[in-house]
Length: 192
Image (cartoon, rainbow, N blue to C red; front, side, top):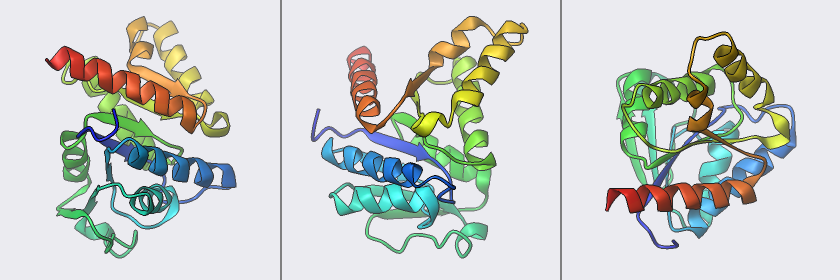
């Protein structure tokens, strides 16, 4: 699959978090995107996990597309690095541009913004608006409470059991690499 023209959207924290393992995992994801010849689509910030994944991807030779709203240019130190860079009017447009320019979505640890991004693409998938794979990197079991919440929503009758099938949980970068390759191969085959 190396050399393919897939683009992977990565949603993640603009902070590094308390556990250094998350930064290491973000850097591993950046390198795996480059190793596979994929393009990274990200929030264009050069801080936190967002900066870590982008710096690792670029450092390993990946093409990048950064997307950032005007009001966050200074706060997130918008990328001045090589690669395409798009400035949007607001957060909604940022998410839309990132989503539309990607073939798969990967969510790394993050805060409210990452949760917002995850739930938006999950909702769109549930409504049949797309079939892009959604993968969570469960670094240090970060997403365990989120998966318990999704199970609770299903158990309480607010979603079909199939909701859980729209999300692939990967424990580390290696398993994420395998899952992402399989999902993109499957997506590519069904598009032919």
